[in-house]
Image (cartoon, rainbow, N blue to C red; front, side, top):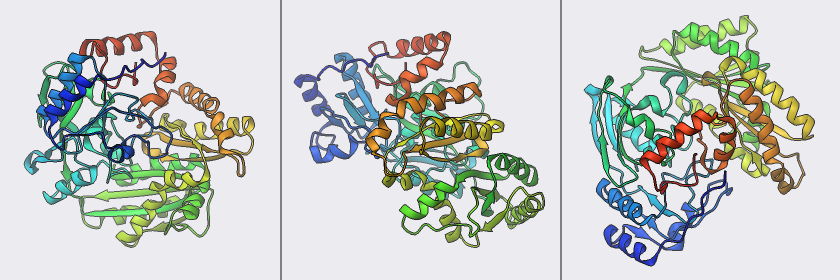
Length: 473
């Protein structure tokens, strides 16, 4: 499956776009464009004839309508934190909603808020907190990632175990469809059984079915107690057993349950300023556990019971419980810094995969055996969200080997990992999406029925295929 060629945009179309967006609403300044044309790991770079910067939904509709009329392709971009290349244009108009940053409404009695697509996740957290509520989606890139991008990629993060993905946290959407029409579906309803749920088509569609301009999001009560612990475990099998024990012990109050390898902790300590080894015993694997409760003191008590039982049952070998918010943040910095810690180690084969929780350990062991036999010396940094089966399985090159040689083997390694994932009933993209990186490969794993259905939906909404044309099927 070859990506469609992107024809050049005519001077007339560019002039019309500039006129409708007005002063400050567009840019061709190379310095302004530069950070938006490179993926943060430097894996993808692109070009665009124009950066469109609309301020309102109507301006977004005008841009998309004009492009649809002229047959001009558009790539929407959120905070440019994506890891599969879908946000980097290759000649398309680049559409950024960074100026659409209004928090339109916060309704504590509805446990909902309405925010525009350019609002960052951190700003959404602040708006919810100011109203005595919380928005639970949690990502390392919260200061840059925007609500529009998070919706369009169905972002996951560390709290999926308890709250679900972005798909589970959206009550309604406002979006501009590929023909330039505005669909206002900003309802705050938990129940609306009146036919097709259009918002769910747009969530995770990576900008191919329209541009999300605002979202109604679910809010939750502020929790009264929180406990965070780093524990040492022997292997991922113990992590799965410990997760089951934690759920039973807390009655479902496990907020996060993360797995980190010995290599991952070593790289974080080596390459990230201020990051320290969380356990003096230096175990082969670690679990980062967070428990939260609406009752004061309940989370701490539950964590104490859990760790005591786990030590007695030999599920864990060591444990450290955060004694302050500063220490809790330091624990989380080890986990959230995993990708950044790898960057100075040279190229890594990144795999964002999911398998049933019960098969996580089987996957990690089988993948490790196969890759180490096929590519001697590779270093495997497996980490991720045990509670939802999502493992970030990253393969670094052998120490001292030219990174270009490691890069050349990336596709061969990916096929091994992804074939194994699929054999275990998993997915080759758990939370990052497909983008340009995985679109073609994913088509090879999907059935003819699924591909035909997806293509029919896209053709119905975007017959000219102007929206992010190099992404999805």
